[in-house]
Structure formats: structure tokens, C-alpha cells
Length: 561
Image (cartoon, rainbow, N blue to C red):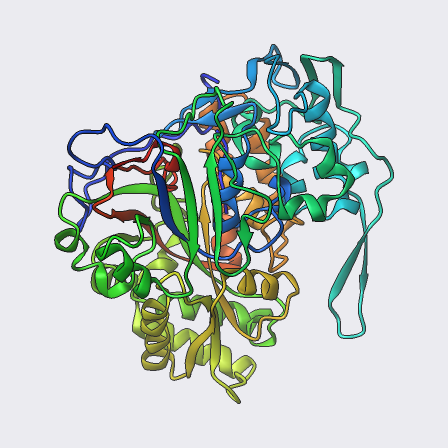
């Protein structure tokens, strides 16, 4: 789901202003037109949905919780609108060998409760996140640090129904490669040299936590205390299934100083009413548009819309525990499903050109992207080939068509129309019934995936955490990775990722990562669908708005009147 951010580090994003059909006003930029001055006390209302979990940075790896966490907290680094890493709480981040790192932390920084932020704060927060007994979704992001395997250890066992369950079993409480040598110095030893490791340090998993969070994470997550450009308006500012209200943190002095008085996230289960609210100025900004508005938003919101290509993609994931998609027959069916999807037509008709058909498992705006990888021909629409492969599979093992193939998805994100189009393609080209399995909340889909209870397929997507090919591969498809909900595993894929991380040049690293993608094309644990040009629209109350490199609205940079 989310995002992180030295000079020649691996995978620094190369976001080009791609000219896409249907791009918004302003030549595809993300800034509004007109005078950018505004009322610094104005509170912005923004589209969102109920977060999946309590708001702990290392436990938040979905979009709706992530957008709140990133405003409440600040880490060692952040990212500018183009994906360039910018030091925030870090004075410096240095290494002479890419394995041993020294980080100097700015002094005088505090959480909004007055607690000082020191080197030890980061060390304690990272150890908490990595320790398996704390069940933090993003603990995987600390995998590179020496000693991670000991603190993250789990016991795995098969249940009677053949599923695998895990229980925390750490053999150490802290990572051996992590230490605070004084109040301002963090030393980090990695398990192997990784030239781009510091690029990750702007991602939310690496944010510092006050002592109260470590003492009682559940309670803290309902009323978090951070150090970012915003803070909770008051205790209880999170009204579940309704809204979260943030106000400007007047003590904040970092690179993301707010140009408005706060942000209230209003929760919607359908983008249609939100669009109507925007048109009547009862909502100020959204990054989720109903499908039928993709053809009209530029005229509906003249001079109040923008679109650009961003580091976000979509996939259709196939759980390996589904009997229809296991073994030799299952592999043929996965290929058939991919050939049966007319990505180009859906991108044009349903998305009005705000999507482009996927060419790989990573979006083209990421440095190192390569088109024409071995196996990527699977992404081309070919109805005859799809039908032939499906028939071959049925000769090996008949398909269980006792009920329609379900595609799990949240309905708030404007997903129904494209899923209906995909399902129709399956019906016409494969002769099978398929339908959406709808959920009002994105969190419900994630919980179903995490518990491995999907009856069919699921929509999935990835919004870059930090600008690197690896970020679209390791956290999503790596064995035991934080967002690998369907539990895909392949030793060759993991080996290529590790070799890429240890590479001494950007070119060598990206070559390994692209080889790893070829393994994914062979296994097809998910089907790449399309990459995004993210449209946003805003009300008459907003003077200026923009998105960042990965499509996230830069809420702190919104000016209003």
C-alpha cells in the first residue's frame, strides 16, 4: 500500500509527465490554477474511508489509514512531490560501505505531548515494529537490519484443513544491528550491503513512537500522539465509520508545514455521493471518482481538477489455496484469465484514459522499469488463446463451476464497473460466470485476504511507499512479506530480490528486480491490470491542490479560502 523516500541511491523515482488521454487541466500537472494564497486557518474536508486498524504507523499498510498516519507523524526523511528524499528529523544519514550506517537525529524535536524525540526513540520504535509478538503489519520493512530474523521469528504449523497458521516466537527482543550510541546517534548494521536502504526511511513504518504507544498500542492507536504537521483535533477525534478530524500542529517546524488549519477526513462507502458533495461545495477534495464521472470531471470542475501519471498500479490476485487454480490445470487457468481481460478497452471505456494497460508488475514511472519482460505477453488480450488454455486445463482437471467466480472488492473506490467488465470478459471468452463480491469498507477486503478466506479472486493495488522497483515487489510478493496476504512464495523470486538489494549499482539492482518479475510472470500469483494517472478534483473553497509522486494528495500543501 504506502510510501518511503541519497543521492545515487537505487531506484530513485524518475517520474515523467506522461501524456495520457483524459489527463486533467494544467498540462497534466497536479497544481490548481490562480492565486495560491489562502486562509491558513481554513479546515479542509477530504474524501476517505474507515481505516483498517488503530493508527499505529508500523501497523498501517492501507491507503485510508496511511493518509492519516502520514499527517500525524514525521520520520527521519520525507519525500517531495517528485519523490526526491528530503531529510526531516535526520541531520545526516551516512555510510561508507552501504552496510554500516550512521544516522544523526535533530535535537530539540518533540511529540505533541511534550515528550522528547531522541535516537533511542527511533531504536525502541523500530524494535517494537519488528518484534513478531507485537503483530505489526509493517515489521517486514526492517528485514534488512542484522538481527531481524531473531526478533521476527514465528512458529508455523498446518491446521486440519491444510492451512498454515503462525504464532509469534521471537528469540530476541531487539535487533542486534540497531543501537542508539547517544541521544542523537543511531547506528545500523545491515545483514548485507544495500545501497538504497536509506531511501526507505521516509516510509511510515520507520516513524518514531512516544513511550505511551509502546506501553499500550491499542489504546494509543485510537487517539495517537505524533510529531507531524497535524494532530488530532481532540481526544475522540476519530468517530468510527464517520470521520477523523485533524488540526494544524503549531509546533511543527519540518519540511511539510501546513498551509491550512486542518483536515477532516469524511468517510464514504460510495464515491457517487462524495462527488455530489464536491459539486455543492460540501466536500473540498477527493482522489476517488465514480466511474461515470471520469468522462465529465474536467468540465464539471473546470480549473479545479488535475491528473498525472503516478506510482500506483492494480492487480487481480489469485489465492494459491483455491483448488481451481492449483497444479498444472491451475497454471493454465491463470494464464487464460489474463488473456481474457481486455485491458486496453477497459482503460479506454471504463476509465476514460486515466489508466494505461499494465506492461509489468511495476508502473512505468519508476526508475528501472522495463517493457517486454519474458512472460509479459500474458497481458495482451487474446480471446482465442484464453479459450484454448481454459479447455486444456479442463482436460487435466474439470473446473468447479458450481457457483460463480467471485472477485472481492471494496465498493467505495469506484471498482464495480471495471470488475463487471472483467467478469463479462470471463463469461464471453471462457464461458464461466463471475461477479463482484462487494464490501462497503476496504478494511473488510483486507481482513478477508489476511485470514485467507477468499472464495475466489480479489482486486488489489499498490501505491508506492518509496520510489524503487523493489517496493513494488518485495513487500507484495516476497515470502512472509507484510502485504503478501495470499501467501505466495518462490525461493528463486526471493533470491533475485536479495541479489538486487545487494547490488552495487542501480543498473545491476534493477536487472535483478526485473528478472524477479519474470518469475512472477511464470507463476502468476496475480494478474497486472493497469497503471494509474490519478485524477483529483476540488471544490470552490480550494485555491490550490496537488498530488505527490505516488498519487497521494499533499494535504498539507492545500490552500483554501
